[in-house]
Amino acid sequence: MTNDINPTIEKARQKAKEFRQREKDILRQAQDLFVQHGEDKVTVELIAESAGIGKGTIYKHFQTKYEIYMRLMIQYEEELAELFSSISVADDQDRLIRAYYNFRMSDPDRYALFARLEPKCSSEPSVSELMAQLHRTRVANMDKLQSLVNARIKEGVLIDCPAYFHICAAWAMVHGAVALYESVFFKQLIEDKDAFFDFLLEVSARLGVKRTR
Image 1 (cartoon, rainbow, N blue to C red):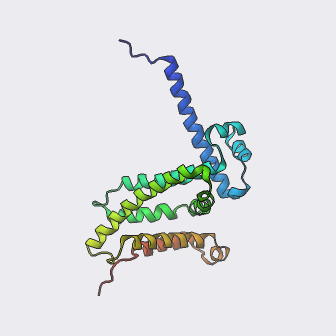
Image 2 (tube, one colour):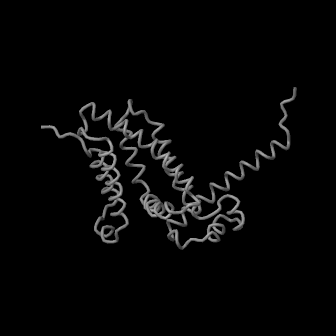
Image 3 (spheres, rainbow, N blue to C red):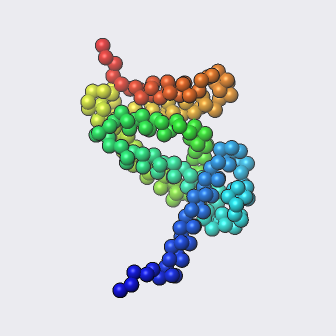
């Protein structure tokens, strides 16, 4: 018996690999352009030019710009899911909550982009299945966070209330931090931005913790 791979199969595998890599490149270039110029000013032609490919090649991967939007948002949530999977709730709860804040706040431009894109995509019928996929990923991430919060409530570390109170408060802190980051006034006011966001992370990590008398 020979172990040689059929040349036709090997060629198909190579083409599939190149297809996936090109798709990643398109998404990366599109995200950079959306952040830099604003998604409304970025055309499919501009994405193709930036990726060094033809406009027609873009449409082999994505039917519309809305699909690109959705794939980027799904990719973002999947990265968070991978982060959660790498940390055990039972073993290192503090690390998990800090990792969550770091993930959300480490790239505020990206977070702000997706906050803008979601309302635009929510009423677009052509991406309804992708929106459902995004929500499924978020539900799984929410379940992981709720396990963390409930465990810390049971330990007496966090205030006893519905877990989603804590999670939504955490989201509000992140959302507020990004709003500060985007504000022209606060950009001028906050001289040491790195130190400020480190401070905000420490405050956020203690959000909802029971006070000791």
